[in-house]
Amino acid sequence: MATMLNLVSVIGILIGISLQSVVGQNCGCAPDLCCSRFGYCGITSDYCGAGCQQGPCSTPPPTNDVSVSDIVTPEFFNGIISQADSSCAGKNFYSRSAFLDALNSYPRFGKVGNQEDSKREIAAFFAHATHETGRFCYTEEIDGPTKDYCDEGNTQYPCVAGKGYYGRGPIQLSWNYNYGPAGNSIGFDGLNNPEIVASDPIISFKTALWFWMNNVHSIITSGQGFGGTIRAINGMECNGGNPATVQARINYYKTYCDQISVSPGDNLTC
Image (cartoon, rainbow, N blue to C red; front, side):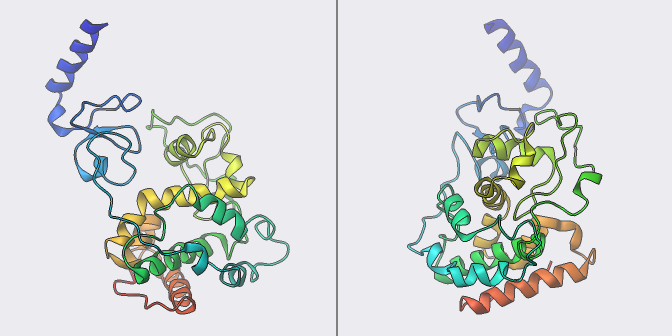
């Protein structure tokens, strides 16, 4: 076994270990490398930043004493979902209590920077959730079963025959390469049971917060503005790709910023 491992190491060096892109086996990275949220070894911010599981991970900024539940009041949450039609699947699915239960697993959400930074992150999250779900009307993407969200080239999180990895939940989690690691992190079988994201409201909110904390949180907290969050969630809309949907997201964001008494800041569009 030791001989085999040495051989693998030599091959890795020959093909470019200097690029620091060796796949981690259950975070079995070298001590001086980080294990990224996707289980890969490296030393750049993509590996050592948000979601880093092991190794010399970047030290995250301290949290503040903001209470997210005091900002996401029943009036705030119900003001969104009350606009959904009574026939909507999400009407009796999404709830403030489910959001707060899910939030317990993500203690850094809305708690980095000053109070205004926290409020902007909360407003941004709910702006995107509102847009993605039609004010919490939809638990699944419209016509999702007809769309192919399988990246067959991703061998770490291979698609399971007969399963659809289309958008589900508040941020419309999509693709096998998101369902797999989200499930591993949260504690469900994302590849074999993606449907649970649209049947368990707490898991549903957890997937939205998982995606946010791994892909969006660092953008909004580093001062890149709401426009950066649009690019992180659906970059195809940017650069003129779909100006109407970009503006819709911005409008929701500005509305929620106004409701929780914080200025929207700069860089609103992408």
